[in-house]
Length: 545
Ligand code: SF4
Ligand code: SF3
Image (spheres, rainbow, N blue to C red):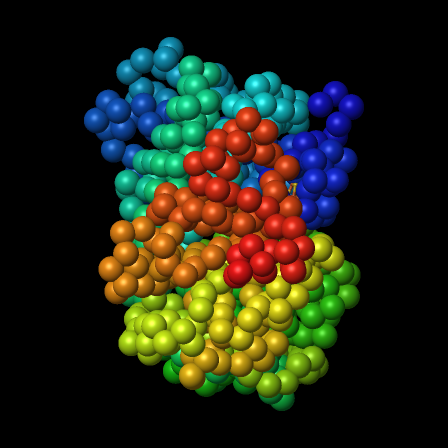
């Protein structure tokens, strides 16, 4: 670490597939990366404190649970690049930690991260000592990081559910228990492997909570055509995953002459019945996160980033980019919620009024909305198609998109898939093939988009339903293969959730995580058959036959 300015290897685009050590490939500077390490450290310390309080029979308040999840969320790849905002979070966490530490009967049993108090002028120095490499054993480090990254993804989903007033104390208690466990030097590799799988189990629960929150508030997604073109009014572009933010913005833009467009992971909002009542809810503009430098420029109006993935903005539109929630970028206005969770988006709306309408970059429509209830409604048709052989295989291609050239694999894979296969997708990975017009099988589109990355939960429910209908004992006996693309830590929780549901032989690409240690990887390969990808033709032979 001495001659490295930072160390981060949490995402798929990490430098040389090893680690970012000077500055992030994502654009994160070394001081932000180090401050995020410190934020994780103090959040783990707070979690050790709250876990001790729970063990004594005490209760932990929602505001503390939310502080933990938003802290983790703010360190997800491409979520928050704002040094001051991260340092403020460290300071708040240290304050809250001190208050709760006073409630612990025997603080001497707690780890250093729980008991130490770090003043603001010590942040920079302390940050350099608490990063990933402070765990020396390679296997322990890998498992601690794998669990932490999974918890980051789970925290993001929990935060969205919380915004819709759905809290799950069991999930929050687990997140904090598991964070605390990553500080515990007495845990063996086996203990940590077990905790990794348990993290997946809570991943399923967290995604189920979010699904219940989303469908409870906005109805069940239904088959929907989404316009890719533009209208003549000025517009606001909303990106990220937070549907509550979108709802508030749509409410506040009514009658203002400003249209609202979705971008990237916000596309699936169109599939919910609730949002269809807003006549100024226009279509989807652009593609996955990594193309935003050109697309945000040509959009012409303000952009609201509700979560990751932010690409450091060009000056040409930086003044039009706003952040909210866990997202942040220095120099971009950040909109906070008031005590009741309400957000005032009037500054964005006022700016939009003086902007030209978006420049059209695409035309046509795409179809989505194939979450669990919609697919269950089509179950007879789907089952008949499988029985008659019209559908030979389902290919789950969920996950993330990214800017690496090697990701053209997924477009080519989708194009070359035999015509009797159906792609099940969720997450921004779909932008590699959702505009290819791959046709349909007896009216069932060959690309079934369930929604955002968290809606991978829907894909799991669909698989379990098919297992039930076909009377199988094992989900792996279904004609389904998994070719998952990952980029950031939400994909980690989706992967762990699939493992906990018993899904085997998942292919993960475009590269395997840099944080894998060879020993533990062998365990994952033996137990779960996890593998990478090779090239399209060979993989088609292996996966489809
Ligand atoms: Fe590097 Fe990814 Fe970490 Fe950014 S998030 S610093 S690209 S490993
Ligand atoms: Fe995409 Fe970041 Fe992962 Fe939610 S927006 S899937 S990469």
